[in-house]
Amino acid sequence: MALTPPSRRTVLAAAPAGALIASGAEASTPSLADDIAAFVAFGEHRAGSPTEARTAGWIAARLARLGYDARTTSVPIKTILDPGGALTAEGWSTPAFPQWRTPPTDLNRPIIAPLSTGGSSVAGTILLAAAPAARNAYWPAATQSAALAARSAGAHALVIAFDDPTDRPYACNQESADDLPLPVAVVSPSALGHALAFASAGATGTLTLNGRPTPAEATVVIAARPGRGQAVVISTPLTGWFRCGAERGPGVALLLRLAGELRASSRPVSLVATGAHELGHLGMKHALTRGLPEPDRTALWIHLGAGIGAQALDTRFGVVSPRYLTAPENLATSLAEAFPSPAWTRLRPSPGAPGEAGDVIGAGYGRVLGLAGGFPGFHTPGDDASAVDHEALADIAASLSALLRSLA
Image (cartoon, rainbow, N blue to C red; front, side, top):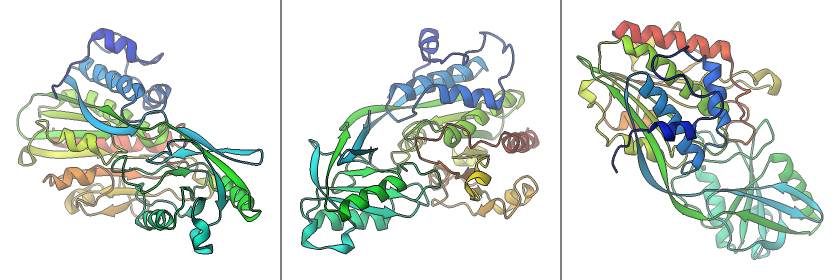
């Protein structure tokens, strides 16, 4: 589809209060915290949603104001645009988030404990199951096996809770709207405990899941400015299941900050903000076909993944949030002071690298720096950006700025 520049009318309609900057020269450069707050203010950043389109328009406008040729392009997807739901039993109710498929009507069925506790009794029921945290944010193979077994045994739906220290429903990324063999709802760990108690008493529950998989269009922002020599590319996703404050906010804020600094570079610069991240990285896969600098013409690609600098809640929840640095050996060595081990786990570049950095590497780009991490509340409705450690994020921004100046 054609690349579309943002109009002023679109930009004004898209921006939340406080997000716009005076036209012409920047009156002032927003802080990283300001940009994260503006990003969060848009709402839930789900692919194909009006929030995604408004956020993309805001980013494109900001980049255009910095002097980049900033355009948006759309990607056809299939997703649940307005998901929601509940599991109820005997006057008790808990929110339930649909993961992939939803049933055609409300299900009023017996709720039973995990599949391993029964055989033929599973038929016609709402099955309950617990699962460890999804390590790479995608639906785990072991859980898919459990879903297939539940369907084979005749279960009508699966209600699952992934381990999460904030006790909220954890939604997994997915490849498409048709990957699961039966309707699946995600609830919080404590809610699953209550449901298991009802199951042990032989209760009947009602599972209501709103929304249906629907064709839609996700949005990708691609911006560029010309220069001499090999190019610099910076990318970050802009979508996820919920508000994505600490998941996506830091990456978006860093991209905008570095875009301003790169105006002083003599090199060609390309900037990419991808939609449809939670749907198999479809936005990045699309962007890689849209005329970005070729691998042999790219000096450095920086991918700003999930949860950068999101360690502010670690002490409260008694966890150590993982941080990952994907980089060639020579680049990782030069960045050792800025991203020290063991606080940052160093990963060698490969198509299996975390997040969309793996897609970039798989497309043949060799000099890729990828940053990513996790945190309490990752992939949950509670991610309001409170997990962002702003001091740590400022240090990361300074390190990336120094790296880019060394390329100028």
